[in-house]
Amino acid sequence: MRSLPRVIIALLPLALVPVLVHLIASGRLDLGGGEKDLVWVLPWLLWSLLFAASSLVLWRRGWSLSSSLLGSSLVGLAGVLVAGILLAALGQLGVAGRF
Image (cartoon, rainbow, N blue to C red):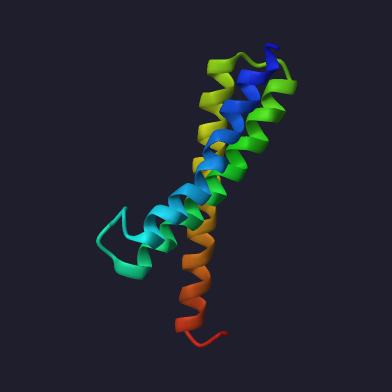
């Protein structure tokens, strides 16, 4: 029974993705960008997937709950930053005429 809270904590951000999409699509959550607000869901989804996977891996490796949450948050943040840098670099290649 001690594993249930860890699994819930690991999957909670991922479970909130459909709620976030619904709130933005219905207009209840307005971030000021119109339809472009849905673009904010993609980094949240990537972070949630990385957070869930890394928190479960760190839990299996025997990390404490607080350490695994911090480590998983950092892994998710690093993944979103790397994806953003790669997309920006690919965008610059496209502007330069290589793609």
